[in-house]
Every structure is written in C-alpha cells, then in structure tokens.
Image 1 (cartoon, rainbow, N blue to C red):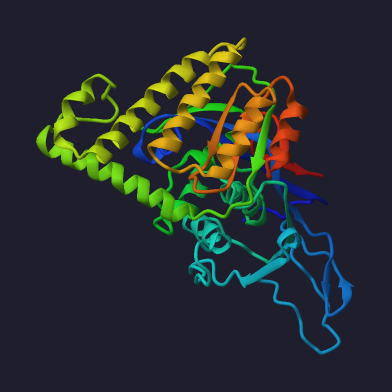
Image 2: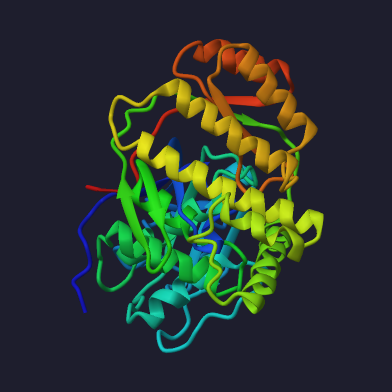
Length: 395
C-alpha cells in the first residue's frame, strides 16, 4: 500500500464541452469534433468538516480522518465518503464498505458510487473515508456534458483518495468514466463527452475500428453558449434517435451485407430510397450528410489559420439537419440562434442530445453583442473559449 500523501490541498477540475460536429454520431461509431470549454466542475478536498455544529479535525482524501468523539458519544465512521454540492443544495454520503465488495446503488445513474466500484474492480483500495465539496460552472442538463465532466473529475479525485495516491492519466480517467457512466447503467450515450472533458482542447475523435483522438490545430475564437432553460430528457432523446438509425441500418444490411454508415456517401444511398419509407430515408440521408459535414470540418480545422466563415457555414448546415431531420432543436433555441446570427455570429447550433438545453454561436468578433442578443432572446449567455482538460492541483 502506498504511503499517505502529504499534500495539504487537493483540487481536481474538468471542463464541459460543446460538440461542434458529429452530433448524434458517436454512438453510431462515426467521428465527431468536440471542444472543451472554459466552464468547469471542481472537486476540493475539505480541510475541515462540521459535525454536530462544531468544527472537528481535518478530513482529507489523502490522510485518514481522526475525528474525536462527539458530544452525543457518536464517533464518525472513517470509512464514510461525504460529498457536499452547495450549488445544487445537495449532499450525499456512503460507506466505502469492504474493498472486496461493491457498493450498492441507491439512485438512478448513481455515478458517485459506480465510480468507486469501477476503481475497486481495477484493484484500487480505499483505506479511509474523506469529505469533499463540488462546485460547478457548467449548466446542468444543458447538453454541455456537466455529468460526464463530474464523473471524470470524480474518477481523478478518487485515484488520489485511494491507497495509490495516484495522479491518473487523462486517458484512463476518460476510460474509467465511460465504464462508470455508460457501461455500468447501460446508457445509450457514447464516449465523446468523457474523452472531450478529460483530454481537453479541440479534438476529432474516431470510434471505428477503435478509439482514436486527434488534436486539431485550429486556433478558434470565442463562442457564446446560450442556455435556454428548457429541460430535456437526454436518455429518451438519445435512445429514440439511436434506435431509429440502428433499425434503418439493420434493414439495409439484411439486404446488402456490405452496407455501412462508415462508407456510405450522399450519392450511394440514393439507391436505398426505394427500400425505406420517406421518414426513414430522410433520417439516413441526414446521418450521412452530417458525417460528411464533420469530415470537411476536420480538414478545415487541421490548420491553425482556420477559415472562420466556412466553419460557421458548416455549423449552420449541421444545425439544419438536427432541426429539420432529427427534430432535436426547439423554437426557443432557433430564436436564440437567429438572434445570435443577426448580432454578428458566424454560425452555431444546438449542442448535446437536444430537445432543450443549450445552443452555441461561434462569435470570434462581435462577441459581447452576440451574448446580449442571446440574452434578449430569453437565454442565459456565457462567453467561452476552448480550454484545457483534466487538471489536478496539489500542494
């Protein structure tokens, strides 16, 4: 077992992300382009804990608690994890239990506990409990990966809380976060969110035949993220669109085993028109079109001096498919995007699964005017830039 760390402070943070291109494509194993943004989730180890109205000794992820007995004779369980989330007026706690046994889940999508279970399966052990506090700048439920950013940060934090006191690599944090968030609960999402948050920057990601991330050279200007305030059902929207596309692929491959979304082109799928109903063919056509928009955008972003006008036009082309074919935009988000364009944005789109949440506008110029226009259209505006990924700070 590793010796306990002597770090006095521990702070782990990760960014949210916007999907520039390839929305609703990663779970089909088609490529995407994502950018980490300068809104972050931060997990701090608590230097002191308040118990029964009084401050007691420090409780940290790298040093066992040695809490004194309280006035009522109760002694804190050193095997307990306590997580404070003041931004959402919530907290949670659970016993780490035996290192050889999984922790039971008590919530839907119980990522706090699933992350511990994943690390236990990887051979990590937890010799003592700890307290921590979570703060977030990322809109929750907005399609900018607040949950995945949290899970990645939590995995990185737990690696320090374990017996290894380990600064886990960004790649492994992303991998374990996918297991804790997607695989553990059979979620319909893909891997884009976890890797975008962990690795940071501007990334093109491939998922077929295996995963690979390419760091793109484009030096992008400011974006304005617009939070609509409209709630969305991520799981339902993802599963609905995903299942419809997979059913189409299943129909086509039953007739033509060589058919593949990876090799389909806008021209080649015209021969499939008679094999599908009109709505199904439109969805297939939109899926293939988005794939080719993403491919063009990837080439565009491989140079540092990107053509901003062309990039903006490709974003709008992508949004048109998401709005008119996949039907995942909303009238309010459309109004916010129209207002941004009138104020000087070069392009933009909805981000995330859709049906509500956030949009973004690419506004390397007239940034403040675009932010004000989105606000007047009823949204909450955040000026963001491409940002770094997982960050672990100790002292």
